Amino acid sequence: MDFRSVIFDFRFARARSALARESWPCLIDTNTGELPVPRNCCVNTAQIENQKSKIKNKHHRGVGLVELLITLAITSALLTATAFAMNSALQAYSINQVQSDTMHRTRIAMHRLSTYIRTSTEHSPMTAARATSFANGDTVIDSGIQLFDENNTELAFAYNALTQQLIVTENGNDHVLLRGVTTFRVVMQPMRSSTSIKTGGGFDLLRQATITLTVRFSNDAADTRADDADQTVTLSTSVMPRRNAM
Image (tube, rainbow, N blue to C red; front, side, top):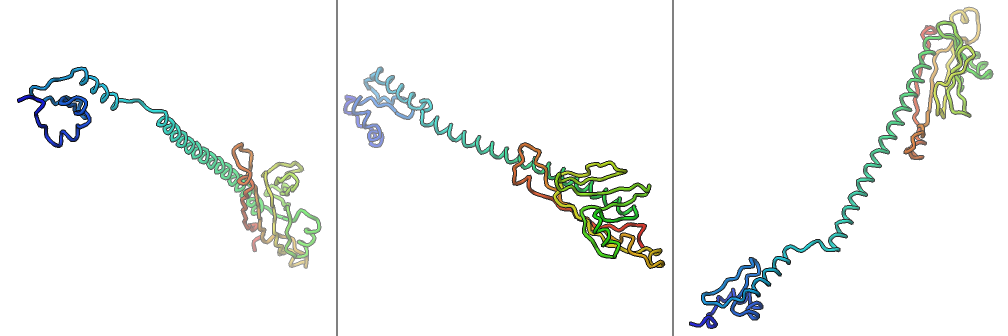
């Protein structure tokens, strides 16, 4: 029987019809690159090698320009998002450090002031007019307080609104106790000592002092934003002199 009269399988012939028209009856499997050659078939070797080369190039082609641009765009987006996340994290850490440092310094100043008031005697407001009202038995509010400590050393705590500093004066020498202070207020409630009661004198002792201290967060850090630096912390405490307790 002549090979041109061989009838191939219907499904195989339909899938390879295009190639069959070119090289009938020599068919090349486009998936494997192999040549299913029927018995007694005349093989065109050059055509087979050419078809195999086309299949190999089809499955091993390089990256196109469009694919490369898409890859670069995705990589750039990921790097930008990572940079923003890192910047936000570092900025939040810096702000937290500033807030923590401010809170720590404010607590130290408040503790020192309340300790002096608790352990000292002869308290009075800084302002002369308020000192007179205090001696008359009125509860006064002042921006400073003066007293004598256990060693009979005169101390004065006053607020300087111009420099926003809390100043402590000891034996005539000024020292900065706290910076960045926006509010410092002392509410003083007077009382009479037993001697004053017996002699009919005025109010000469401090019953209780309520201190309010507001400090603005420092914006010395270079990466601290202005709206974060304007935040404040406020501490308040009440203290009674031990020696004046009755």
